[in-house]
Length: 192
Image (cartoon, rainbow, N blue to C red; front, side, top):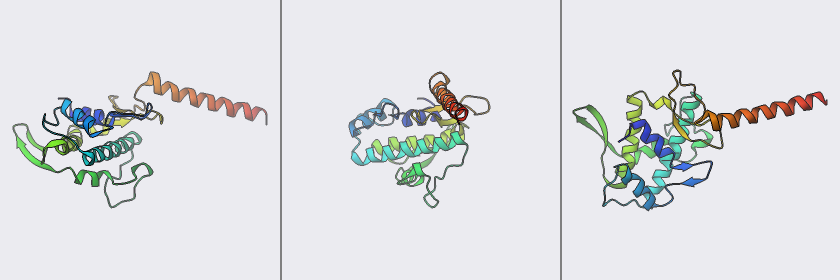
C-alpha cells in the first residue's frame, strides 16, 4: 500500500474540480475504490450514509490541505468559527463518526479502524491523516493554488513552497492570467 500521505492525496483527488468528475458518485463506486486499496473486503458494501460521510471527509480534507498550502492553521474543531469553505460539519465532527482504536504492533503504536466494512475503510483514511502527520508529510499535503484545479499533491520542495500541482499547466495558467491582468491595467492607466 502507498504511504499515508499518498492515500489521503488519492482520496481527496477522487473528485476532479476542474472536470467536475466524481469517482465516488454512488455507494458502489465508493465500495470499489475502498476495495482497490485494500480498505474494504469482498463482502463489504457501502451504503448512502457511508457515501455522504465519504464526501464530507473528502471535502473537509481538501479544505484542510488548502490551509496547509496557505500555511494557516486549519480550524478543525467543532467549537471554533468555520471558514467559508468548511460549511457543514467540521472535519473533527466527521472524524468522530469514524471510530479508531490504538493498536500496538511490531512497528509501534498506530491507529486502526475500530469497525469493519466501508466505514472501517473511511476510518483507515482518517488514520492515514495521523500517519501523515506522524511521518512529517501532513504539512506537505496541499491543494493546487489554481482555483479551477484544486488537485491535491505532495509538496516535495525543500522549503514546502510549491503552489501548483503542475508548474507547466496550472502555474503557467495562473501566471498568464496575472500577466494579462497587468497589461489591461497598464493599458487603461495610459489612456486615463
